[in-house]
Length: 277
Image 1 (cartoon, helix red, strand yellow):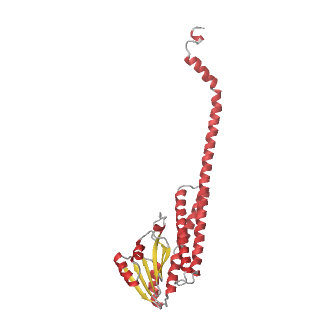
Image 2 (image 1 turned 135 degrees about the horizontal axis):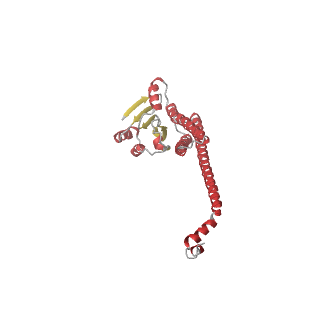
Image 3 (image 1 turned 90 degrees about the horizontal axis):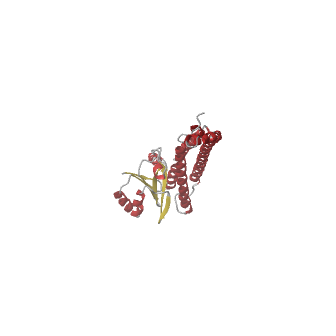
């Protein structure tokens, strides 16, 4: 467990990394927070959400995990959560691992006039922008799949396309829930993010970006399946043409088959057996 404390202009910021249940008991007494609200943050399945505990704003955001596996597709595998508790004169952040924006803010907060509003707004913006590069990479993969579809290089296209579609769907879900969190915070009159325009603009852009990738890869997969179906139909048509030709040829051999059946099996009625000449 690592703890960082900083006294800003109008608030105190406390950051907790990799907390333990014992630490939660201490934080509950220090910040007058319900213990169940703190311990619930250990659940890795949490989606972005926002709640109000009296005069404390409690919300969770998902940050892109740069160490995620290439095969990862779920929200839990692609992202890690950051928990915010924002009180009247303090901010508590909790996370389980290394978060670059938080570490950067720790390094610079001693040399800037940091306020509660600026800290929360800055961290929220950096969390959202963490998805910028992953979406660029996903778009590049989509273009690569598009080139292979039209170049008729169909090996593993379905598998790669499915992974792209799943990631795009996950990003869309993250952005949707994050937007709901920001709207709920903004609708509350006594909260640290009065002006969320600078946060929602990049969020709206990334949401549009993710929607576009999702729709594009869906169309490419449908096109790929259509081309496969067309190829199968062409092969089936060629097979039918061959069978039709063989059927026509076999008709000419039907009289021979009949004679072979009569003379080859009915030995009693064959006139040649009793007529020597």
